Image (cartoon, rainbow, N blue to C red; front, side, top):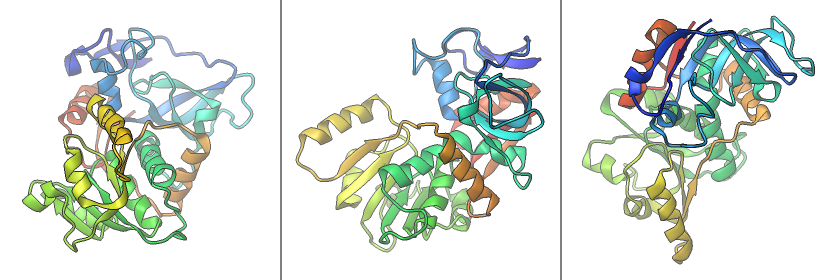
Length: 322
């Protein structure tokens, strides 16, 4: 099969090589998927850069990517839920998305209804799960809208996680303020944001709500915003839920625990749960959440997709279509 892989840490786009490799065989609890679409997440090239060294990748050469949609062609001996011919979306535990075929655990795979395209489905997993975990588990909001109305800020609201976070926060009946680039303000409003700030303006840099609200929750989907800027805009018991934690953020969490402030900083490490992914697929099928697709590339141009993700200005998700 055709695949894209890299053989050592670093190298960026130039480290990616187009190769022919054997089609993988599913273990007893796995399914083999003919990949129709895959999405690129920032964590994919961060792993190439060595962010999880020496734990990930588990070995070289490595085919990157975790989010795929496609059709099952073979099932392992103990697989119960699926059979050959089923359309699915899956999260791959050890990479492998940028290839014509990939293996996924049965427990990380969910059915894909015909109403959802392969591209929309592949856009969902990691970004959608990060947003869902941030809004429900960490922020404590109820997606049926039954909780009290709270004020939520979403930073980088036009990115992969941000576009989902805005939509999920609106399902939870939150008042949503969002930051993004000027060119994406109308899009973010169309996703449901009540107020939108251009992040390059003084108000945007200060995260200041146009209606002078303090935020109960900040879903932080970018980097390089100091705690002092958050603290100035939070309610006394407000929380920052950081979907892009780096070493500096971890140090900030340690400091927050030592100080007496009731304001909290929570780090998101996305957990892949089958029932949560299934729930997101059902929201898309019902028209309650819409994946935003920045661009799509054939596998032969996966390097261009990789480069666009590294550049950091995608609107929604970057996809590779097979």
